[in-house]
Length: 246
Image (cartoon, rainbow, N blue to C red; front, side, top):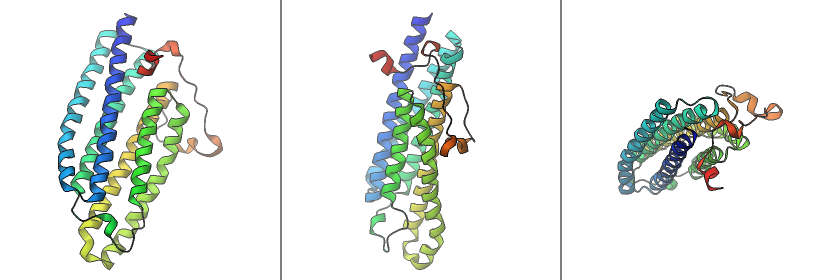
């Protein structure tokens, strides 16, 4: 059964990676459209979410088929569970990218004066790096990289909170720009949630490699008390398509 099972696992791995690439590209294009005030590009990107949703359903169905046919245990079971969870997070990121596209107006945020308290280009860059790092951590089984992603989430939370706290003041001073401020607040909120999704993926990597559930325990991932996670035994299953290429 093992050869057939691992063939199915490799297929899941490839499909998950492709979904991650599609979602990352969509997010990057949506942010560019928003910052440029390109409503036409934003509208086209909204349509792409249908493909993301379809792929998410197909991948979930494949995972359920693998569970039913092979009844995996230990690391193999953790891997299939991880694929299911990451797949759901990627679909959620696609939905949040659609939300950002929906906030796009012809008014360019960069044209606002005085400058905003948050550099949105830097914020979106940081979120995209978090997402990219979480996917790399998954494909390379890099637990330390996953822990770094989790620790960086607080920075995005701080940026969103900073803008949120300044929002009422900006609206009072520049009521004529209220529509743009509202859009920026919505985008900031969506980016903060995308960072949460990237953090969830990083948590899934730690679960995959160690069997430990670290949700709601981020305090232990900072400072001197960062734990050392022991990766799972390679013979215990749980690998990625990169292993096949070695």
